[in-house]
Each structure stands twice: as C-alpha cells, then as structure tokens.
Length: 110
Image (cartoon, rainbow, N blue to C red; front, side, top):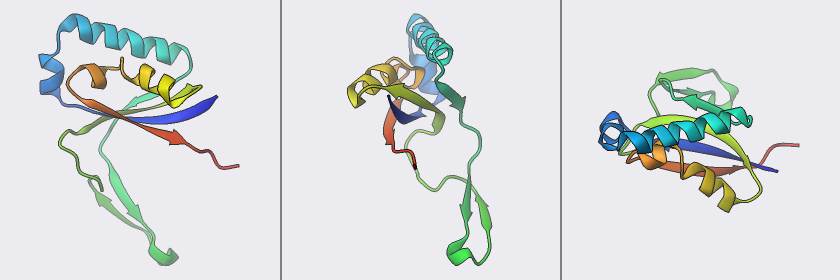
C-alpha cells in the first residue's frame, strides 16, 4: 500500500464558519483514520534548518514556504491509489472547514 503525506491548511475563522455537524463528522473521520493507524498531528511552530556544505548548522524560526492559510496539521495516510488518498483527505477537518489539504506521494528510501 502506498503512503501519502498530507498537509492541512486552515484557520480558526474558517473552522468557526463551518457548520458544527460538518465539523463533527470530519473529526469522527479523523478518529477513524487514527484507529486505522494513520499518523495525524497538529502543526506546531516551525523552524528552518540549514547546514550548507556541511559547514555549520543554522536554525531560523518560521516557515520557509508561505501560504494564505497557516499550516494546521499533517498526516501520513496509506491508500492504494492517489484517488483513494484524495477521498480520505476530502473528509478531514481542514478540507471541510474552509481550508485545503495537499497530498504528497511519499516515496520511501530503500
């Protein structure tokens, strides 16, 4: 089974504007994903790490990429196909609460 990294973007305003019943269904979906072994997490504060040419590590607070919505969370899901991964992600809180979910196929190193 293939693995996919999902990145959920969303903010409190979009969450609050979404019908409570829809949000509850999305959280129930997340609970089922967790029960099935999906790794799900809420995003904390990011840092950028650099060690150019192995000459020394620098760490800088903040994200490297920018988006109109903040990163809300991550998951590693298993699915047979990208289409199945899209179906699973489409029912998550970020997808239904005015946010967006990116899905990245994860090609594991041998």
